[in-house]
Image 1 (spheres, rainbow, N blue to C red):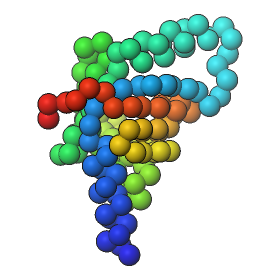
Image 2 (cartoon, rainbow, N blue to C red; image 1 turned 90 degrees about the vertical axis):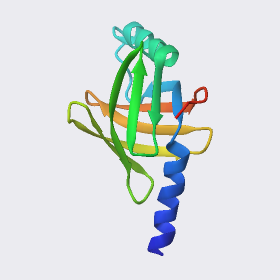
Image 3 (cartoon, rainbow, N blue to C red; image 1 turned 60 degrees about the vertical axis):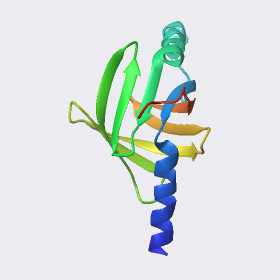
Image 4 (cartoon, rainbow, N blue to C red; image 1 turned 120 degrees about the vertical axis):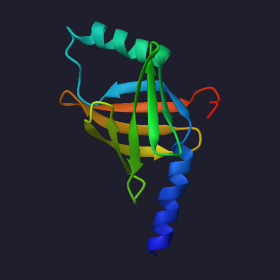
Length: 127
């Protein structure tokens, strides 16, 4: 049984190891009307300019407007949570809602808001 669970996590790790781009980004809570234009602008910028690459060696790289950040990632044994540590040493947890070869949906907390990231594969990567 344990081997079957580890195999499931391993299969999901393989599905993650590629470059993803944002297809959609949404907040679970309503955004206050006065902030909606700023949030919509930020979401549009993220869709156009953000990529996230997971590598098989347990590292990741994000790219936003040519600003790169690197860190490490680990998928838990259930294949439902990712723990990442950025270059600043800060640990962040993500909950995977859906993961296939063509779709990756996860949620995270950003400033006390739950944000859902809907990702799709970006262009092919070299690594």
